[in-house]
Image (cartoon, rainbow, N blue to C red; front, side, top):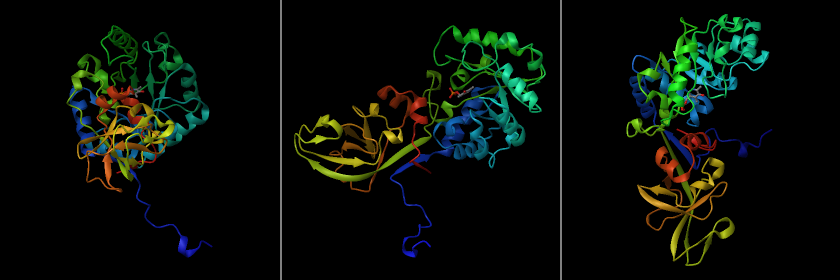
Length: 355
Ligand SMILES: *Cc1c(COP(=O)(O)O)cnc(C)c1O
């Protein structure tokens, strides 16, 4: 019998880390990308828990904005989406790797993206049905070789959607138009299928790349992969962290593991509940800052697993239990930390309460 004095409270303990998701901004980003897709429609990549933002929240906001096609990478990512969108609206990019996954796809109704002859055969053996086909146009990562599009196992798939993925759309290189030409030629084999090539960066390349469906991910969540999108994408994720302790340091006092920082003069320091286990990697420490009502509070010492210390001398009314903002303007933080905008999003830890 549980001790009645020690039963779990009905509401969870308030957390010291929260991630505010601006659903209106997410909807606006989708509408912008959908407009920029011209005659094509924008779908949404919601793999990896919607890039760390939280797949369920993101899918609802995107669905309400008008998104009708969702992409995940793994079969495991499908079930939690099913209470919000129909299975037929979900495509699984990794495709069926074995017969269990092919049968799961048949049972659940999500669409497999077929990437190889092996996957095509697995899909036929499981009974087949609606599917998509990924053609590799030079990335050499995942997808069917263009020479195999006429193989009977492939043509018999009758894919409803044919796609390929751009390797370098965030830069201006000859590889991108070469992929476009290859995709045009290979996808012509499937005149009844819808076609899809562009990710977020590809959308910024204009109507040649849009085809019928675009597949933005990063830019939905506040990332800016190309200059054309700068200033037009809204920030979606706003992390905040609670102050655990405030202390006075004297000149010469050391801070954190390995004492990499020594106070140059007396100052006030705040310890906050954010560390590399939360995705605040050590490369965001030196030169980085948290912020309090827009005031930058420099990080001092090493980032620990669960904590970081800031010089809060500039915020003299800061108290233990107050909240600080974690800067998350993705292009800016990426440039300062050397982490990609993708890494910044997808490493957001599980300890954030997403609200
Ligand atoms: C992740 C992914 C996308 C989205 O790419 P972004 O660069 O985040 O816009 C689109 N298509 C495929 C196949 C992907 O794997």
